[in-house]
Amino acid sequence: MSKVSLSSPWIGYARKLYMLFGEDPDINIVYGELEGPEVKLYVNNSEKADALIKALPAEKEFGNVTLKITVIPANTEDAPIDIFRKIFTGNPIMAEIVVDESPSQIGMSHVLFVNEVVQYFDDRLNDPMGLETTLYEDLAREVFEQPDGVFFNTELDGDDIIIWP
Image (cartoon, rainbow, N blue to C red):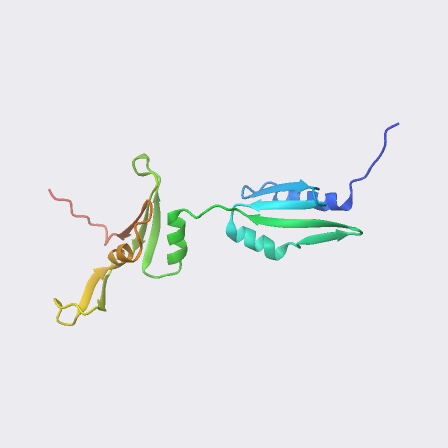
């Protein structure tokens, strides 16, 4: 005679979490009972991890059993271009970010600034008004230490590129 058993309610809840997030490539779900039942969600996206921390309960009670729910953000670092994407997002001086995937330039990324001349007072003795005249890309090169594989450039001015001879 076979014995019929039912899953405990905390296992049912863990399965619900798995069904919601098991297909998400950013999330790895692990269930364990080392120090009591616990579901751990390892999340490779910091924004998603933060949102899950805010939305999911830290624990769920089922009578005398408490299921812990732990969201663990990935311990991965941002790629250098991602750091600059975060720095300049929403800033009108940035035109776009280009990540070059061509075989000859793998790992090279570019922050493209708008194509305009920038002037500011800087006690320049060789300028009658004491102004420094430059481009945003030049300012970025001087302000930020050379990040790995990230280059600062200015967007193209129109469609005409002069190549001579």
